[in-house]
Length: 110
Length: 116
Image (cartoon, rainbow over all chains, first blue to last red; front, side):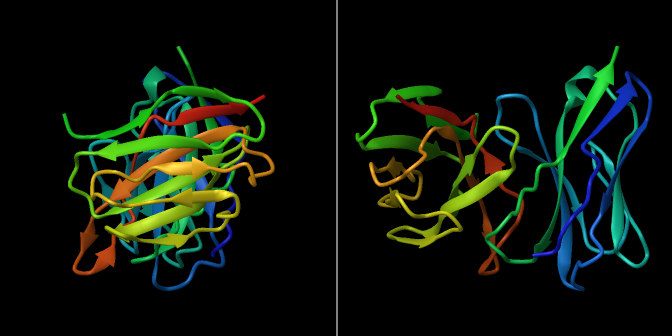
């Protein structure tokens, strides 16, 4: 499994963009990069995933470095509901395993 | 509404007792998973199942057992052999596309088990 490094925590202000970084320098060429988030006392929620190209969906954007050793999850306008622990998870396609590290706690200030 | 149901939300048991956690999904997903989460930690995979009547051990299967008699249901039994059973237990499901597991997993709300 590829190792990931995320900051322990970040703070942002409501309605401002926030960039959540992740380093995954040992990622293999076939690993997808998944992002999940977990609100307090709830199960994790899928956010977005990508392989090489940048990806956008209704929740967020994912920017993947050209060498794929890092990625950034972008929340375009943070809301209070975005306060959660965010997990960056490199995963081999078709693997049953999502390896959740400790993640990064995002605090959104009103 | 489609989703995953776990019950109960909170569960208390005495040490030495087996306890079964329920997980039901109406998403028509083929694969189902059980994870354990300890305070301040990430999730660890206990068991997973890709098809009815078949399941595989995850990273921390010791002290746990599962069954998959129906596609919709994947109950987890925490046995007395599990040394530290107090934890937050999460069930998830995903589709299988083209014979391959997809990594987009849908999670239930979790069951918080406390063994006294």
